[in-house]
Amino acid sequence: MAAKVDFTLDYNVIYNKALSPKSRTDDSVLSLEFTKTLVAKLSGWGFKKGFYGDRDDIPGKNVFKVLIDNVKNSKKTIVIITSGFLKNCWSVYSHQNAFKSLLDKNNSGRLIPIALDVEEHDIPQELNVQTKIFFSKDDYLSPECDAEWNKLKMV
Image 1: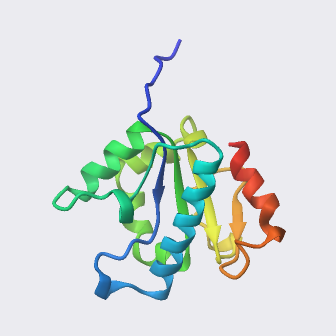
Image 2: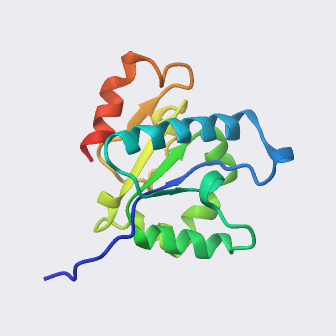
Image 3: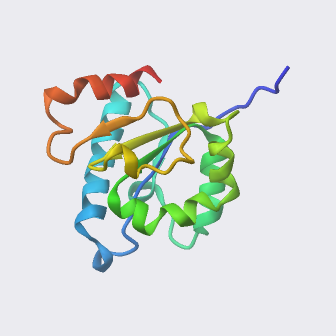
């Protein structure tokens, strides 16, 4: 029987985070705005303990230590996949052991990829999950996307 894990976080969100106000791009702004919407929805569904960098990062902390701790301590890790994330972040995250453990078939239930304004063929094959969630930057707030939000609510 597997040991019970006591998670301290309901979720952890990984996204294309700007490193400073001067390094913001359209993609990092979209990622942050979507993350804020996501966190509000999760909170409304009863998931109160979460982490995302723009709100919760502590200056001076090692980014990889934070990643390791958050992945280990989160019931779910949500990855917001945008074109900027694929270009700027994917290679860094995919080589970190903590993130690699989520890609393992035994842990894949803890990983939730959300594609934001990217096509399915652009999503890395390493994200070996059966059902992905897709949103467009133009309509993720519209009622037409309720079915995608409901997929997230079910996990």
